[in-house]
Amino acid sequence: MFIAVVTSVRTVVVNFWPMALWALILAALTLSTAATGFLALTVVFPWLGLASWRAFRELAPSAA
Image (spheres, rainbow, N blue to C red):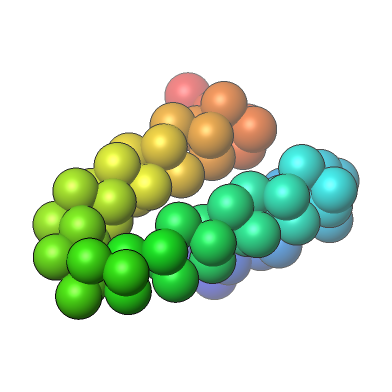
């Protein structure tokens, strides 16, 4: 668990501005689901989760 936290923090520090932009996109899309009574969360959350995972896999060094 400790290695995962250190890797995440290091990735954010090295890629601060792209990560800050992604955080704003996450916040904006999450807040925009309020317009549909949060029904859009069923589509937005899985999409953002997959996109975040793929971005992290691209940025973080591989263990293998």
